[in-house]
Length: 397
Ligand code: AMP
Image (cartoon, rainbow, N blue to C red; front, side, top):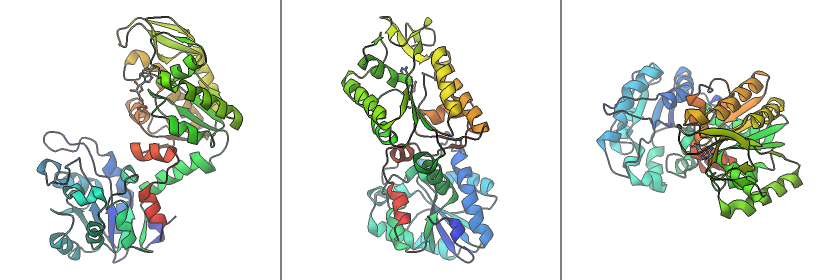
């Protein structure tokens, strides 16, 4: 796996795919700078080598048309501030203007290209467009995990024009190594905590992960499909009746593979899907009519704690309750605290994909776990066992 550490960028122009798809307010101020900060180490290494950086990204969904509100010019000042270099901007990402701006670029300088998605050829993965992009650098660096699952021109197709001269940036390399740790190289016992609303959206992950883990915690709304399938009474809890057979088959597969599955034994049930609802703790398989399970109960959290603290590699995907409502956030916060403790004791913990990242940020766990993935869809596809086209394109020579 080649990273930017395998190259000396002195006198070289690096064409870097970054993910600067950042949120902007009505005055075009960047309201969350995480993605820009995440790309900084890669850019700095290239500049310190004596190279220059040509940054390309998309912003929003302009659907192939120029759109002033989605111009990357709005973020140029913020990128300059964060990188510590006055970033130049060119109002197209291909063509003579962009090529001239690149030709003028000196070592230590940074150029930001206009939004890639102002051209429909970007998302269609057009080879000719990718060839135009490839004229803008000597070495291609992909540092955008968030789009690595897309076979777009700038994320995948362009790589074929850089044989032997393409690599991963630090951010993308870190994502790949973190996923590898969970899926292949992690110290045992390996635990996956899968929560969230529906079995249907997690099924491919569960099936893929059964070959990798020693323990599987199932939480959140998925719980009730498993409980009902086993004959429990779940009241008005969320349930996918058409997935009950699948749930039983997952439990059988887990048993055959020696994976210990931990499903909640008690829940905090509510008489309404509301923060003002009345609540009671009940056994997960005896939830009365008119009540629905919205968070893990105390006995369940004790079990989760024991499993989490004995694990050496932990993947967390999906909240174990309706954490958006304060009354039902305790389970998710507790799981975060247990993972924090396990991490302090030396476990490797990865949070990624979907709403667990939002939960981790909301409750301030991002610095307490080993790694929080930056790519929702890309992470989910990795956990499903798919090879991401953006990653494969760098690995092929
Ligand atoms: P996901 O995007 O699949 O990770 O699902 C996250 C969503 O699942 C969050 O919005 C949670 O509120 C929701 N969720 C978690 N537990 C439950 C539950 N017991 N009932 C309904 N929704 C839940």
